[in-house]
Length: 149
Image (cartoon, rainbow, N blue to C red):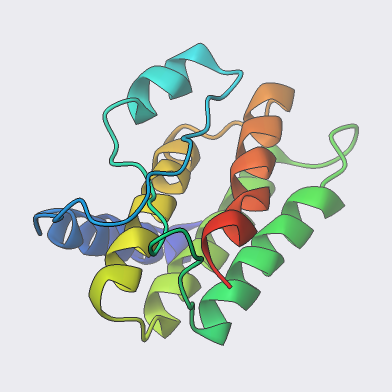
């Protein structure tokens, strides 16, 4: 478990530094995603929304796209009847950290990626693998293709 703490700290540092950049508000706003978990919804209400590139999806680097796909696979493979919530959380956090390590995106596409990733960061913070949390995270991960190609 200790080996995952540096990845989480790296994510928090990267998210914190990137969120300080002002956004010019260009592009079309896309809908934000409400979650069934009201505590999580409150935590993500103040986060900046993901916007499209003049109605088009942003170009993402392949490593980011595969990282999101890996998180979807990890979540789908989890068996709530016999799976360990802490193990699921650790696997998701590790993959989430790899997305940041491998990111080569720049400019507004990079900023919008961070807007998309911030809710995941908040969801993973108190993730206990409840059905509501898994559903909310799954819904957010599924929305990746709405914003990025």
